[in-house]
Length: 567
Image 1 (cartoon, one colour):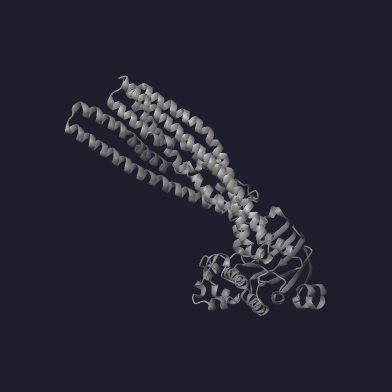
Image 2: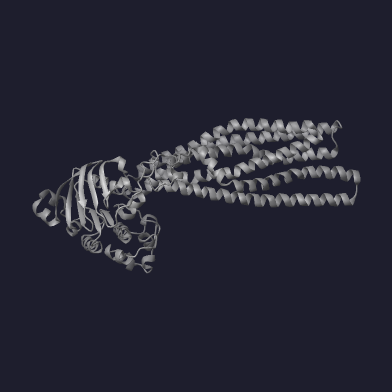
């Protein structure tokens, strides 16, 4: 069931506020340390000016020793404050990015939970990685902004003590630079948001291509598919170039304006020294500050850009996190070992479908139209939420609308015909949690034993991503073994043996019936072996049940059924 936190709307600004609020302690510590770093670094040219001033007046080794000691303290402060300040901020940044990645992934992994407005898995992946990281950058941006402001203020105060005109020049110049760059940063934010959207679409296209690579090769459609991806990727590339140009213009403008301000301070200080209004030591300090202030000014001027990028990424995350729930799940739980009832369901090609599988019964459904089977699987797997269809589905006497998604999936496992195989081992694919008590029985029932025996590592044999090093039949049996090892109260299998030979299929059918004896099992298939192993067969034609009997009786008395399932 979804938590209150994930149900609450989260626009981009609210996401940034949440990130800042959760890391306030780390940000305060980081701001203090980074402010100390900037203050110490700005104090370096001030100390040099004072050294020149007093050394020239006193001309004593003692004053020189004190000055050198002061510089050593300043340098040590600069080094340590930067090191520990960035350590605190980067740890908080990394932790916050992890939190948002997990939260976005939680929404993406349960597509029925939220209406994500047509976002594909590839797009959600980009949001959960790049956008989460860029949003978390706000944790570093704010302390660095404040610490840069400290450096500018210290420099302005020090210059004002020498001559008020120098201090005012720094303050007015800084305000002017920020005003210009604030306007430019808005363009960066909008361009970055558009770029992220196009990169996400390219990622979604890649994900689709990888999933459909085998069938694409089968009918020769891979070149057209790659051409489609090339167009999407080229569009993303053009937008990336646009963003790079905008960023380049921003960085160039900031550097030029900072250099102009530094030059103006140096020239003004030189003129004042020439006029005799400031001393040589104050001139050295002013020229030094004009050089040192370039770094905090550069950092200070870049902050609006990073704020806009973080805001744009937060808005992208809000597309997922603020999406309204498709349905509000109920608090009930089904009775253990209960039956499965489909009552008047209308969804897709289903036209008022009605049937019941009693507790402990093994029932097969023979669909004449593959689309009807897919629609039924979508309803039972809760990929189509109760509001998306008419009618009622009951599990253990409780309507699905009254149950949480977690409770449904805990009591009823729906194994699709195209179940994913993950990188890892045979064992981790069959029993991901490592808690199955029926793993050996599941391996034997699915006839995966020959695959295990074929490799020296047995169940620890390494499986590549999507089962690339397994045949189609081996992948299907591995998926079936995983479904059987889960040992749920209700098991729904959709075409579990289409990629295996007839002899193996016959053995699997018998093994499933034996292993699942006394447990509720529904198999949606046209396999004669599985249909024969079932207690009874329901014929699904044009979205409704048109016949019901044992497989052999239907073969003997229904010619259409015989043509549909006989091989």
